[in-house]
Structure formats: C-alpha cells, structure tokens
Amino acid sequence: MGLWKCGIEGCDGRFEDVESAVIHQTTEHERHECKVCGTIVPEGYFAIRHTFEEHSRAEFVRAYDADSSAVREREDVKAAVEEEADLERVVSDLKERGAL
Image (cartoon, rainbow, N blue to C red; front, top):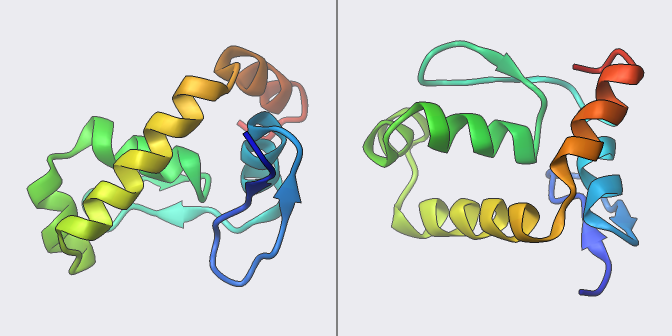
C-alpha cells in the first residue's frame, strides 16, 4: 500500500507504514473526548476503534451528527489499519513511550 496519511484534520503527515501513522496520531495530536461517553482516547485510529467497539453506529450518528457515509468512511479506515498493522507492536511501542 502507498503512503499512509495521518488523516487528522489540519495534518499533512504521510508515513511509509501504518504503524508509524498510528503512533504519530497518538503521540503528536491532542486526545479526543468521545461525544458518546466522555472517555478520553488518542485521536485517529484509536478514537475510531473506541467508538465502533464501545458504541453502536446509531449512537455515533446521533452524537457526532454524522451520516451513513461518515460511518462507512471510519469503518473502512478501521478495517484498513487492522488488516495492515501489527497493532501489538504499536501498543507495545506506545506503552514504552508512556503514550498509552
């Protein structure tokens, strides 16, 4: 797969691998407060993962005033990251850095 974009609004970061993109999102951007439950999570992939593993699609749509295309976009990002990334390595790296 080509370069991975950070994907966070206002950031032009591009990375050779998905792991670097997720680590960047977690360490270089502000945390995100879930509008459904108030939990503070890293921005980017981890925020998407939290939302879709902890809440229903309907809760996401209501809380974020989103539509079905926003749901599909985030589901596609989540699936692409999980298909490509060594998430155990990412989590281990982030824990070593004190970022998780």
